[in-house]
Length: 42
Image (tube, rainbow, N blue to C red):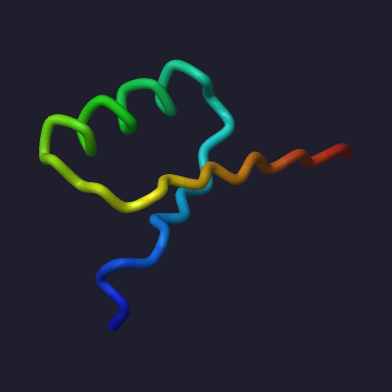
């Protein structure tokens, strides 16, 4: 497992993205965080 690669998170809520970013920063993760947003049209 690559522990230095980016962290990919599927999350479309901006508030949740902010919370997750803050958590990773507080845990001193230096990995790049990439958020993927899903769009589903019905």
